[in-house]
Image 1 (cartoon, rainbow, N blue to C red):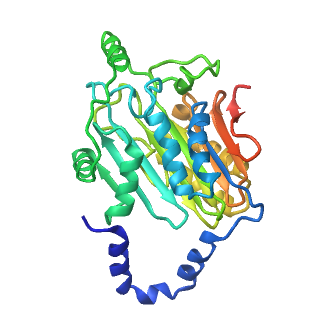
Image 2: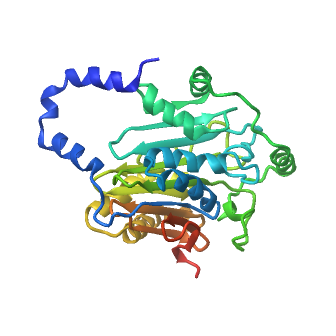
Length: 342
């Protein structure tokens, strides 16, 4: 398998002139620059983000890299059988297949993703392998599985007894109507929810060297059509990182996020001077304006961190929360503001 760094080095020889442009020169410089605040911080979506943050903080607090931290954090809910929206234990599609989507990205725009991946527990780690060991950004379906096995990942059945039972119960009616905020069902947020949904963990980190990174991983919508892919593995939709500006991730109805290139939009709004919270709010309102009849009936939320470690989030519906971890508090859980609800 071609090593990604060698591939990029070879390609660069044919583009030496482009490397001299002002844009190319400006992009590389700030990547390792420490933020003005000196903050080291990790943030992630939903209540189960607290445990993910703890795993990430174990790396960040020792001076480790943000890229390693977000991968470690995302692996926690992937392995949690109580979590029916991410990884092992995720609810299957309508044909009984558990299919995973994930992406990862660093401050220098290195990125990788997998979509519709079956039989591999840690999709986020396969996404990182795509980033580091191929010339590609996204691998899907059987090709993603073949690559994962070549990289040494172990094949396993992801359909747990609880998920299989839920699927067979759903088959009695085959009613497909995703409902809002299902991801908090097993984590005590106190919001009325339904299993007939989906969701995601998105995680963003800033390390002691001022380097940003992000990851996003999900099993997608329960009872979706086989082959459906949401926003999570798509760079610019479910995740986007720019070391000069900040990072963003999304959660909720992936189709609405894809339509608006949501996470890229949030980062670009921060580039224009918005705070993370302001950028997330404006992106949510954009989603509502573009597709109001559908978006108003579902949940879409964004979470963002700028290069100085400031964090903010915003949602369409009440009930979205995000976890924040730093040297002062490793278990903060913040209810996000929303368009609807209190």
